[in-house]
View 1: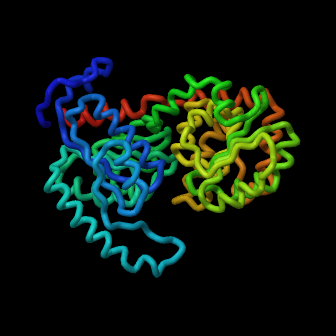
View 2: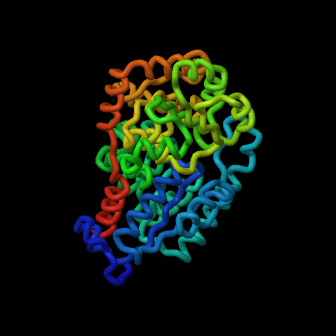
Length: 384
């Protein structure tokens, strides 16, 4: 490890206070569910010692190439793509891209000389961690879902430590390497409690004291959820509910037209200030990605999940069922969304006992310091 001036945070544990420099590569991305935890881990490492040098590696053309620099970190992109399940012919060039990415990784490692590598999932994780393991460099895997991806399972065999979001992950990874940490959550989400309901309602221009439903389906949107809400918007309004609706970019104009001239509805393709949305919401309708679940546990909201059924290994369904089995959420199948989403929302809105039950149970699953726990474990492993 490199020597550096003493810039550690005395509020942190002794393991973190003693850190002096170091060079870390964080690899992965493709979705916010991979990128935001990666940035949170980077921030925790830098909080321990701002002399730590961090380099991100992502896939060219993916959202990490924009989001990581916005967070203040350097990133290098690989010419790599994932397996296309819908069109086999598009996979012809995949072996060549993989070989090229390994050559790019070798060059990056030669110049940066990392002490450790952290993989958070996504196309770029595999060649980076595979190369690190071949060179005897310590590697760490963060698996955010309740069903591990195939690449992470392969990488986990030689990883130094595997950080997971929930229990029962020993069926995918060597048990002695697994540590349940939860998923790192953005600081503004952890701070939702500091935003008053009154302030949040004012932010969206909604009526105080009226039950509010937050509908989110990711940055691109969830067609099944959006269609269900558009078809049933009259029923929701007639039930006395007001709506905060993040439609996603796909067909955003269509969904806005569906609620034109209707009162009590705030609609946009994306919500930047999610802390206000969560503070305003009494009930949430959401996909069941790992980060959405982590955030909803922290903000303690009754939630109806509509898992995206075509996610890799159908992991969103597994994520949602994990909470449903703990009586911490309701689940509607994507194929049944059109018929059941609106009626489920209205029934839950009218059942205060069920809302309280779901809120209490999901709150028990909240973890607000996963980033710090992961950073400590990485540093401890590097020092030993």
